[in-house]
Image (cartoon, helix red, strand yellow):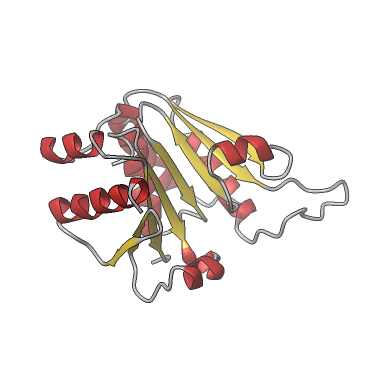
Length: 150
Length: 64
């Protein structure tokens, strides 16, 4: 069964058509299943997240989904700083790295849509002063935003 | 912020799925923002104050 209803699908398609400028790759780190279908790493929301992202990325030609396995693609995961599953890495015109860990449900789905727009444009609504300060930071920063579903 | 600067990595974590992460960062209120594992705050901040905390977190890494 589809996670996005027909109405939501139309709204999201419309939003993406308006907001996406360049293409964005959503790289999802998840788990593979053994030949018997048993998960190699426990992950309660991996399947749901993958389905949601499949439905989402079908709604725009500018979105591409690439699925990776945390165990089989461990080197790539390490390089991208991926420690948990599901994690998605957003790749477009962004200068820094953006990761989303967990299933983007409820309000977080809207946050993800906004992020996809920003990443596709390589620009945000931040002020010129803020942008300048961020570019001249004395060293690398990792900003974690811890949220709960709403 | 990570869209604008190659020095910034942004990670959103849905902590209800990762109780160990919630415990590690002592999350009592959300959103909780943690910068370079040393500067943190709960709730929303105006943009200039948020950036101040990011700068503070960045300085901490080069000058512990």
